[in-house]
Length: 283
Image (cartoon, rainbow, N blue to C red; front, side, top):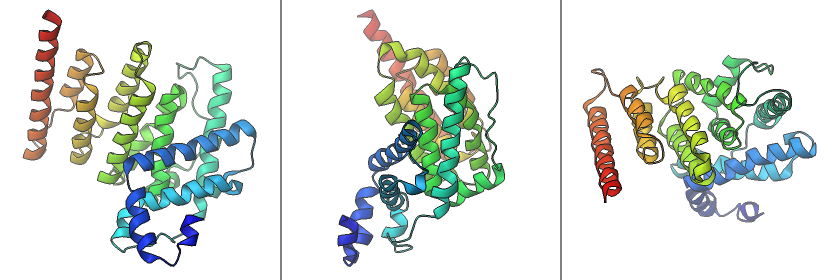
């Protein structure tokens, strides 16, 4: 109603609102809310996403947020409508994945991948759609993180390889990676702080690095963001795990000097961190 009431105020529509909604924390909240609303539909047996007015509103705000810089640059306006396929195909597909995961967890050990997904998808079409639609890719990233948050490993581990396919078709730009790393950092802060969750955190971080960041380490931008994430988590995981990731993410001769400098800075900071830890343990 607020947006509609101010529909004639172009400064409000194309400057102030997008600027607020561009905040990664706001995008995180909106994206998580959208995914949780889909879960609620599964629980309450509510009709499909296209009939959910609350979800429509959240997606409208989120669409402004993920395209905020294009709006601020004048390349598009806040009134550009959400692609109908989000509601009629993409989110119903996510809903089917949720349903299959729930059925699987009722019948199997949730920590083992003894069976594969039955929900079929046209991978080329699915990947291409997310490549061309930032709203869809943000929802998918958040969905994977939420799966880990709720310990739905069977599905989460099978969906991570999709990120590699997105990267291979050129989707992993700075906006994509920045939001993904932000999603992960927020999930760690909110879901894995207790000591009893340490092993689950190690498992989570290992899957994220081994199944995406390390595989894509030849991609310079991905490598830069892997360093950002590793810098954030090395104080929360074991030294052996950190060393394992540092070794796997070491830049090659083909990488730029900037990447080598970032890696050197990261390793130096980690060594300083380890020395401080040792001093504190001895005192």
